[in-house]
Length: 207
Image 1 (cartoon, rainbow, N blue to C red):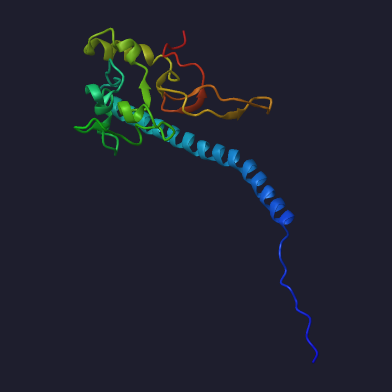
Image 2 (image 1 turned 180 degrees about the horizontal axis):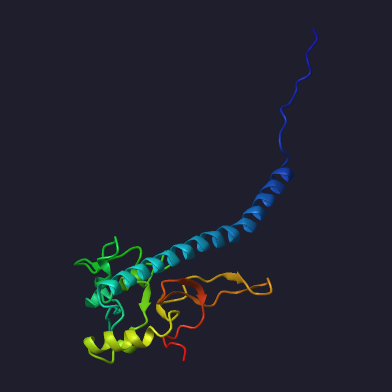
């Protein structure tokens, strides 16, 4: 009786399995930072979109209120019912104002919360600081809106809103093509433009 030789199925050796695992690990290690940068880039773009929405609301408010800027003397903090200037802008934004429930949980979202901010927005209700507060806080409402609006309007690039913190750590290309740290913040200018990586956050117009 003639027996056929037994054919064993192909199989990986232990070394081949270990090499495959090592290669996969290296590929994952290489791709994760790129995925993280892409994700943060998308969040930064969404944050800039938030600021542009606030800028459009400011322009519409000014058009309906003798070209004046909204009044505010304290940063937004729903825990103390400080929401100015957001209520003045809410009429022109399709979004609910930040709020808190009886248990103190804060509810907020775009355009008031930066997608990279998982702390301040959910403690105070807003990721952005309204820069005219720095001047308005010293004057009564009627005077502040008129005089400070006139003062700030001398420079359309003056900052209206800026990130409360450096949410968007990352890099951008410098003028020489080399990568440099992105140390600035996202800001909204008086003319409605939004910038990433803005370094000068003073609200004082150029002389």
